[in-house]
Each structure stands twice: as C-alpha cells, then as structure tokens.
Amino acid sequence: TSSLLASFRKLCFGHVKLKLQQAVLRKSEVAREAPPKMVFERFKFDRKESESLKDTMFYRAYEQMQNVDLSSLRPQKPEGSAPFLSFAVVFKGEHVVGEGGPYRQFFADVSAELQPSVASPEIFSTALNLLCPTPNTANTQGNARDKYTLTPSAKDTTQLLLYEFLGLLMGCCMRTGVRLALDLPSVIWKQITQEPLSLSDLEEVDSSVVGMLQYITQPNLSAEEFDSIFTENFTAMLSDTSTVELIPDGVNTPVTFDRREEYAQLLLKARLNESAAQCKAIRKGISLVVPEVLVSFSTSQEIACTICGRPTIDLEMLRRHTWYSPGLAEDCPRVQFLWQVLEELDERDKVRFIKFCWGQERLPANEEEYRRRQLRFMIKPAMREGAGNEENALPKADTCFFNLELPNYKTKEKLKEKLMIAIYTDFVSMNAEDDPALSPESLDSRLNSDY
Image 1 (cartoon, helix red, strand yellow):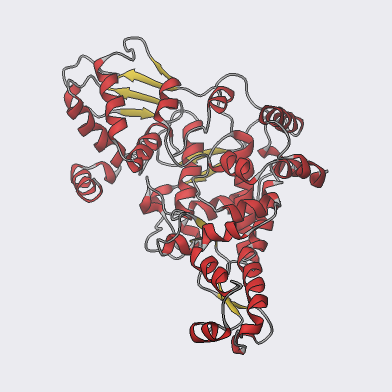
Image 2: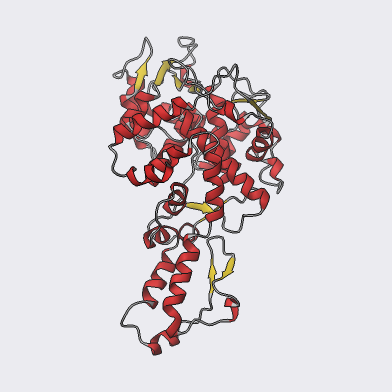
C-alpha cells in the first residue's frame, strides 16, 4: 500500500490529499481518559557545562516515554479551540494556566537543544550530537547556509533509539500541528519519504564536493591535468568530518585518472546515504504515531512543512488572523505602533516575538492551516490599564492561547523599547517563581549583549 501511494503522491491535488490525510488520522485515533504526562524541571538543566544526556529535555522525555502506552499519543481531536496534545507537559516551579503553551514550549526547547536557535541560543546542547551543521553551513558556502543534517557517525544502538524518538516527536507534530523548529536538508526528508536522491540534494549539503565531482568527470579533462591537481584516495569525508572508506583499503588506494568515474559514483552514493540508518530510525518513530502510509503519501517538501513549518514569519498572514479584544481595534494608535515595529524588526527578532507570544518559533504555513487549526492571534489591553503606569509596564503574553497584552504606550519608540525588553528576556521560563533571569541586572546584561 505504501509503495502504491508513493507513486501517486505528486499526482494528487493538494486539497484532495489533505482530506485523505485527515481521514487516515481520524481512523487511527484512540479514545483516552487523559493524556500521558511529562514532567521537567527546566532550571536544573546545565546544558552549557554538562556533557551528560540527562541534562537535556530531549533525553529526559525519551526516558519518560519508555513508560507510555504509545497508542495514547494518537488522541481524538477535541472540539473547538481546546488544545490538541499527544501528551501533557508540566514544568515544575513554573505557574502556567493551560496546557497548549507548555506543550509548544517543550517542542521549542527540544528543537533548540538539537539545533542552535535564533530565539534561545543558550539552550543548545552538544551532548545530544544528533544534528550537525552541513558543510555549506559550517563553511558559509553554497546557497543553503542554514541547514543542519543528521550526524553520520551517530549510529550506535542508543543513538538510533534517540533518532527513533525524534521520529516519534515528528509524528506528534504531524498529528497535533505543533512544530519542531529544525532546518533539515532535502536529502534527509527524501530518505524519510523514500523519494529518489540526486546530485542537487548533495549540493544543498556540500556544494564544494559537488563542484569537485563535476570537475573530475568533465569529458575534456586530461590525464595530465587530473594528476597535477587531484591527490585523493578512495575515502569520503562525511558531513560531521568523519571518514569512511569507499572500497576495501580505500585509505591506501589513490584515485587515478582511469578510476575517477568509479570514485565519483562511490563518493556520491556514500554522501547521499551517509545518514541512511538514522533516517530509517526516524521513519520508524514517525510510524508509531501516524500510519506509515501518510509518510509514503507525502512529498519531502510537504512533510518538511508539516513537521517543521516555515522558518520565516509572514506578518501579513498573521495580521489577517489577528483578533482584537473589546477596547482595541486595528486602527488604534498602539496597535498601529505594534505592526509598524514588527515590520521593522529583522527576522531573528520576529521569531523571538512569535516565541514570546506563542511558545514556539514557527507559524502556520498557509491560510488553510490557520483555518483548520482554528488559530488566531489576540491583542488585548493590559490587565491593569488606567492605573497610570502604562509607560513603564511590559507587554505580557499568554502562550497557551496566543494572546498579547499590550499596554497603552503613547509613542512607537516607547512600545519598541518595552517590547524588545520583553522578547529578549521571556525565553527562560514560563512565569517561574524567583526567576533570576528577570532581575534588572540580568535584563541590562542581556540587552547589551543581544540587542
């Protein structure tokens, strides 16, 4: 069935495919009394100094998931705007109302542990080592300089189980609409959906190797010119700089002019499939939460967008899905100031703003997804408006409901000043008690270093 669906995935109209996908998800839902619960104490993680997996939320979640009936991760979709969760997340010591915010925050934190994040760079953990920058990203070369690939050498038993767990989280994304803010190249997504790979997929990862392959296989290259510049053996350096032999004793076998085509084919195959075992584990993990036919029925672009969304913030689309509570309207001065400030922000700060308001970095990819998820951004007046201290108050967010409380600032400059303080300091906790990150000294040091 999977192979048959795969042959039709590019022929089916988008709206038809979406209806089929939603029908398959509904057929695989499971009734449950309550979601499984994951509990974390985020302030106790020492990601910067520790090389222990236990100092990551990703690994702690993996451990807790061992005791979960995985069928419970496939819940029925609730009516109306109730949060749609595969599991509930509790952050001990952080007083949060609602379940949607912590759930999205969990996926945002896990993403930032796996790949350096724009909004929360301090969360990145070197202990996991499941993703690494592509050579294009590491060397700022080629057109795709923002991609992270699966670490080719990370394939021992434990690491493959962690990739399978990453796939399980991707399945939760496909089922509940939450996002992992990861930037994986097409060569990874195509292996997950089992689509053919090509030279262009490698070019997105390592353009210098593609250039070398194109050079040594050009028909007018002479033996003399080849011998004068090419000194490689039958080995391949992978994306994480680990090395594999392309033939037995390849490390001691020079590439000659007569064998250059053989070398090029072996190198291309090795590089395209450098993370094949990891991709297989991820696909297995996804199928624990959604039927495997959905993966086969999706193109690599579709599944990437479903799981990870789009990395850029479309303010115009967000504006079309913004509501204003009584007392505010789109033509109110403070609301106009807000949209003007957001337009002026660079992409990094737009992402911080979305994470501040919603608990994750990526918005729905299109109008249909906004409607299907019944998602809207709500702007509200400040709770204590009229007390006379609006100019000194900071904006506040309710990430569970995607609400922003906006004080009545008199100027755009004052709104921007307070908004920047808010979005640069509110990525540490969700209303935690005695949070040291919220001290005046900490605010000053962060703004001086980041803004």
